[in-house]
Image (cartoon, rainbow, N blue to C red; front, side):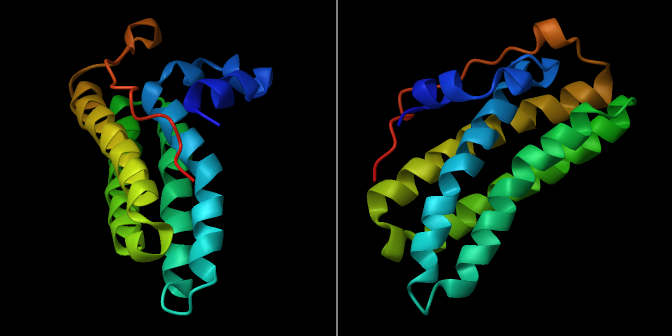
Length: 152
């Protein structure tokens, strides 16, 4: 499954929400959807069992914090939750790096590239929210999508 195939299968109730226009949200939701396989693989190795839980929680926290922030009325509150998502993205990248010996280099590198793309988007979003209210129709980002094929 690649990102485009996944995106086309997301239920319309989610795609019709204005939140769907945020690229960082779509990428983080996709990563959350595929990370359960990674977490499951990490549970089978006794050395990475606890890492599995940390990884799954931090990956899921990215989209959850973007969702929460998007729902806030003030730009300051939105920025705070986008910063939490940024922290979770960085944490997720670290957990993927630590799990690379079990997950395999190709899978870990793919996931770390994804988290890096999310980090880049969030780094742009936070200052925008700190300075002024962002308009949804202008929330478009240039993102490298060449890495979206999932190695398994």
